[in-house]
Length: 452
Ligand code: BES
Ligand code: ZN
Image (cartoon, rainbow, N blue to C red; front, top):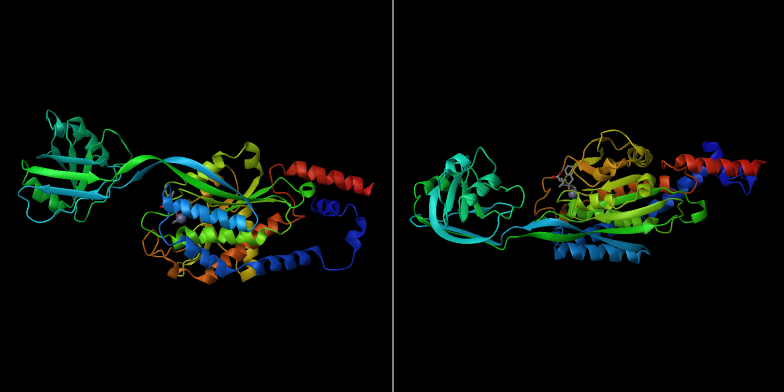
């Protein structure tokens, strides 16, 4: 079949097969080198620097600015760009918290629970044990502040139980040493303002039960937010000779709060931009889509949205997803790939081939999720995450900054993925799509016509 396909493409000039000169493989590899030589790791580094000036939390102005920058870069390379909006339910933590209790000397250090609502309450502090339904039976907590120990049931349930009895505020204290940074699990409009305290603070307040306390939680906000995916598409060079295959190269552009996300994932975003730049004018028979996703850190929301909006045909035709996430840290280990099922697929195979050719060693792979390849794999699309393992200590911290980025690591992953994508997208490569049979039948027909 491979022979038929190769010959078919020489149909107009059947003597091509007998022509002297460099083999097709050699021509390809020279072209491959030409593409790779265009890669400019300094550009990747500079784009990471631009993106990682501040955290890019999904749904914030900082994300919007990153989206604008990415779209403008793609456009400057000559791409048509689609900015794909989607909404999700978001929560902004409070900007200020305070708790004071009459008779308590010294300062309390309350912390917020994720999904706590705002409040400004002054009332009696009531010790209600673990805050279970049984603990609260028969109590009227109207206008009061419930003091609850951690344990047995979820924080969210404790707040709901107290609110049900009329409490206007809740203080939950730890049952082990150390600070308590908790979440109420999900937003619920029945919540009242809730904060956490350490075990020692909580025990001190227990002794003061019956005193008047004042609790304020300000600036928290829950509601619909808008994030965006940025999609730059390169159509096949010659529609007549094109196959229906689509390759998606992607990364997420958002970061976690507080982290500039130079490595996670301005690095993958900037490598995606650079691959888009160097591949823009390369002849390909396959469609290439360069996509940066929003709201990955909030649960892969952008990539699920992207995959959900594909037609069945587009899903069938998408033959590969290369997901670049955390690909530049000097303090992380070696490059590895992760597939959702731990099995090899077209992406790992092409990348092992290119890494072996480039470095003399095939990039290893194993099972792993936790990033934007997951929705692709779940839809049956061959997909892999490119990441360095072990992770750097700065992961999801304010220290994930440009000074920890290694330009050689950027160059290496850009070459491996660029070469693998080119291998698949170049003219003459047999189609990989599940519509492959159709393409092969067409190739056979052309072949038949050319020999008879
Ligand atoms: N950049 C990480 C990806 C990652 C993958 C980290 C594997 C570590 C191991 C990604 O942005 C991330 O932090 N993912 C979340 C999960 C996601 C579903 C919110 C995580 O791993 O906690
Ligand atoms: Zn990430």
